Length: 390
Image (cartoon, rainbow, N blue to C red; front, side, top):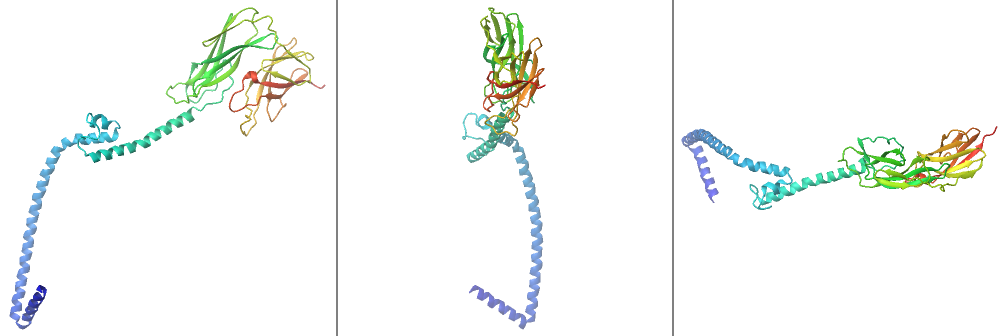
């Protein structure tokens, strides 16, 4: 209804403009004056607004200065929050020295305490997992246990890639053994220990003073004792030849590191020597002697070296071979060292000439397995000595 009254009033005014031109001119003049007055009001308001804004700016600067002055009191809280986010032990050690988390935390709410604590723990989990993975990789890759090798008297094994030092080896077993030979050959059967996966057999030294024989056995260990190693105790076994210079009825003392053994040779200890003929296959153990009367020859196997034959429980690209080291004594002649190579792919391929005779290695038992090392006294070689055709 109000809108209808306004429409009626405006319609009457429009009719007055058409009927009375003087009234219309007055209304136009009034409208013009109203517009000028509105513009003046706008200018005045603009000026007043600018002045008010300037006053607000001054007040804001004053407030800012006051906040800057009070900022020193907040700096310590900011620093403590920053340290808390970086240090795992800071939350309990400094922010909550006595009250205990999560109560009475200065400067932050309890909800913020919980959120920051959860964030801190979440950030620490990947680091812990990465650290464990790194330690496991070091343990497996850096110190994998190599298969034990036959030691060489007086000479070190190949130098590892990292720097090593010599250490005294623990001795697990020592036996004095007598070979079936003329004269009787004596040797030491030694089992020494490898305390962890990073330690390797290095060498041994032998020194005889009268009736006392001193043997020192060495391992090689990492120079850096902080290197991570697998804690697996290993052993290596080997024979150390002592020779034949022993008198029956006399007591001899052997010291291998801290292990002491004594033995007394007896005149009745005359081992049996095998008697074989030419062109006859025979089997011979390490340290055992065989006599070929027809060829006036006495021979023995001193040791087996470089046994690289493929283990029977492993699939290999190459079959490998082994070297049989034989000592031959001809009547009235000097001892002669012979090396015969034998392997699954070339049995009997290696032949040594012995002044009218030829010696061939036909076989070597046992075959290796991946789970253990063959001791020297376990090897049995099948040999044959044939007369050369003229």
